[in-house]
Amino acid sequence: MVNKAPLWKRILAQSYIWILLLLMYLPVLLLIVFSFSTSALGEPFEFTWDNYVELFASHDIQVAVGNTLIIAFVTGVLATLIGTLGAIGVHESKPGVRKALEFTTQVPVVNPEIVIALSLIVMFVFVGGIFGRLQLSFWTLLIGHLVLATPFVYLSVRPKLMQMDPALYEAALDLGCTPRQALWKVTLPEILPGIMSGFLMAVTLSLDDFIVTAFTRGPGLLSGASRIQTISTYVEGIIKKHPLPTSLRALTTFIFIAVLTLVVVFLLVQNLKARQGKKRKGRQY
Image (cartoon, rainbow, N blue to C red):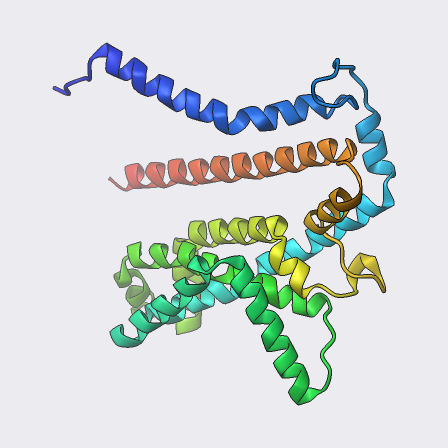
């Protein structure tokens, strides 16, 4: 028989959780509410759709959002590919090499972003001095985001590899699969949740980044001959000279809803797969 905690302890624990959730999401909820008003905070609330109309009419915001999404998607795909292959390679390495590589991959995670950004600029200048002048562009920005995001993909995939039963891969080889076929049919399906988590983490880091972007960006993408503007650099440039536009309230509302939708879909897919796995095991028994 399970001993339940006293009622007052359960109420206190639940209250503590709800208070934390309220403190975390109250600012976001207030932002969503005020996205339907052009009035400043503290002024009487007047409902209007003007912020959303201005958002879709602003060319600068559309360029910043487009650049941000392109960079985030490309970074997510490449970082997931590199991080997954790196995690598999480290998993199959000798113990000494594995420890050294695991330590190396954790350095960018604990490093402040300003250190990574300055290091990248020094490297680009050094490489430019050897091979000729190196212009900052989309490619230097992409390298910076990959350096920032790839270690987090590795850290998402590596635990799944450690949890996987090594006998599955060996059984696939014994049944006639080549190493490549065993990788595609056995290893990758087993670590797919870690790969998806790493992809979402890489996309989120790229969407959120400002420091590395500000240091490594150049002309390109939808900005044409101008320096690439992302959402973070656009907001930073605006608030230097002007008050924060109320249309950005609508933009951040869209971002929050999009991220929330992705998380909910990801969790639903994971729960569906878990239920299907339980049903299969039940049929086997």
